[in-house]
Length: 96
Length: 347
Image 1: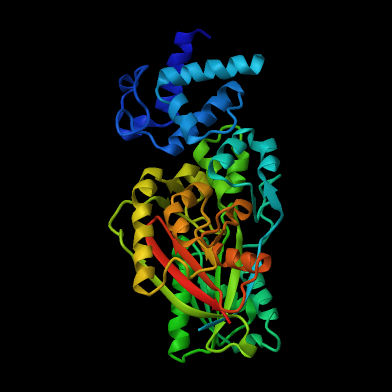
Image 2: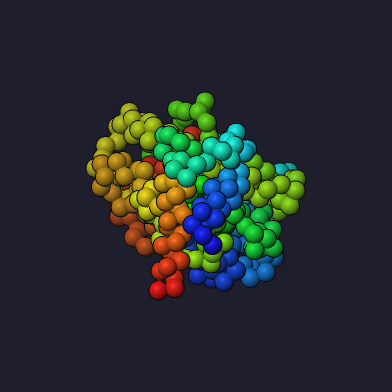
C-alpha cells in the first residue's frame, strides 16, 4: 500500500466513516491530510473518538498499539498525516 | 441513623482483560489500560455470552442476607423498608425493590426504587434516613446494584469480529454486582457506624450530560439490543465530563464546608469508582483531604448503583476503621450531574 493510498484510507475509512462524521454534519472534503483532529480547532474530536481510531487501526492491520496515553494520542493522532505516519511506524516495528 | 452491617455479592467469576483478549483481540488491553480497569465480574459466561441465571435482584438478595447474617440475633422480619438503587433492574416493572421484597419474603416491608446512577446509593440512604428519623420504620435494607452484562454481552459476543471501540469499552468498564447496608434507628452493643450526615444536591442539572444510558433493563430489553446500534445504549460524552465534573466536585467541597467538615476530618474516602481517568479529575479534592482513597473499580468494573457500598464493604475488610474514625462516602453522576455524600463515624 503506497503512502497516498494509506492516507486516503485514514481520511475516508478510518476517520470519516468509522467515526460517522457525516452524522455530525462533516463532509469528507473537510478532512484533509493536515486537518487537526483534537482540541478546540479542526474536527474537535473527543477521547472516545481517539480510542475508536486506535481500535480501527488494530483491527485493520493486526497491529498492537500498546498503551495509549493522552500524550501519545495527542501526538500520533494530531492529523490524518500523523496517523498515517504512525501506522507505518507500527508496521515497521512489527516486522523489525 | 446507624449502619449496623454491610454485605456484598459479585456474580460469576472475575473476568480479567487477558481472558477477553482471546475473543476481542488486543484492543481489550488498549481500552482497559486507558481507563485503568483490570477485571470485572459478569452475570454471563464470557466464553459463550449466555446468562448465568442471576440478575440484579438476586445479587441484592445475596448481599442483603450477608449483611443480616453479620448482626447477631437480628431477625430479618425486623426490616421495615427496602430501598434499592439501580439503573439496571431486572424489569421496568415489577420494581427491583419489590422483587427483593418477594425473594426475602418480607411482606410487610415497604419497597422503594431509586434510579440515580453513581449517586443513587446516597439518595437511597437519604430516603432511608427520612423514614428512620420519622419513626416510621426501625430498620431498613439499602441495596445498590447493577447487572449490565446481560443487556449487551451476548450481542457483542456474536458481533465480535466487527465491534467498535464504544461497544467494547462498555463491556470493559462496567461490571455486575450489589452491596447492601443494614441501617437502623439503633445499633446493638455500640457496634457499626453512626451516619452523621447524608445529603444530596445538584448544581448543573441544565447542562448537557456526560453519559446517557438510554434503554432497557438487565433481563428485559425494552426494544432489544439487536434493533439498535449497541453503542447507542451507553453514550459517553467525555468533553462534557471534562468541562463539568470539576464544578460538581467544587460544589461538593463547598457543601462539606457548610456542614462543618474540613480536610483533616476523614480517615478514608470512598468515592466514585467509574474509572481511573475520572478519579484523576478529583485529585484536587483528594490532595486536600489526605485521606486513604479506596479504588475498587479496577477489580469490579464500574457498578454505578452498587459501587459506593461495595467499596465501603471492601475497604472495611481490608482496613477496618477504628473507633471515632470518619469515612466520607461520596457519589456523583454525569447524566444530570447529581452528587451526594454520606459521613460515617465508627462507634
